[in-house]
Length: 217
Ligand code: B16
Ligand code: MG
Image (cartoon, rainbow, N blue to C red; front, side, top):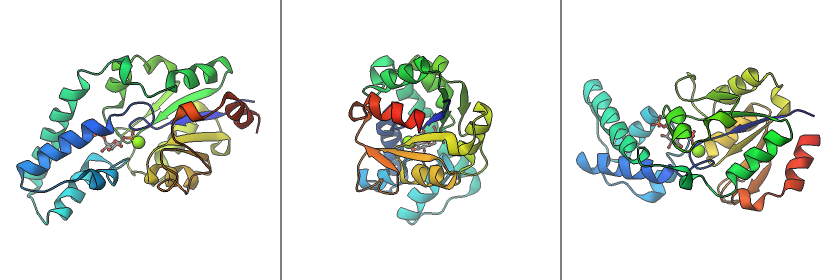
């Protein structure tokens, strides 16, 4: 049985959410907007444009198109300065083990991320070669919860959406997987990701038995 396993990046493979937070926080404070970690939760899985729109909404600010574009570039430069220092040690627990298990079992593996920085990040942590297909923020026109990112991933893998499994840490991403008719596996808190078909705190809690069942299911 060959299934398609589609992984989100930020919050599933690597914990880059903390760097997004630092970069958004710095940007928000530069324009006099307060930005909390609770609000940051709502930016997970959300595109860069939409993230800045939300921050401006929270701070009751409006910007010209030019300033908006400039601020997005500044945020990204700051974010990339953190990414620059990343290495394999930032791969989340048991992610490499699960990827290798899937490869040994001849399963198809894709990345389905909203980030435009996905490929450089995967290179940094030396995981790029594990993926048969990469779909990221540069390839989609509709952001999660729209299923586009995962449907393109399934297509590139040559696997029917019903035979695909998505690993996601964001509410929008779980909804996108459900909308694509894929099996959704939430990585994180049950209280947040309750719309997922299965939920695990992290990959250390997911047994090989479970993965085998999914493959043969
Ligand atoms: P970038 P994912 C998402 O990645 C992040 O969760 C979200 O916080 C970020 O704003 C978005 O990527 C865009 O990222 O600015 O690098 O293009 O979780 O879908 O892998
Ligand atoms: Mg994510």
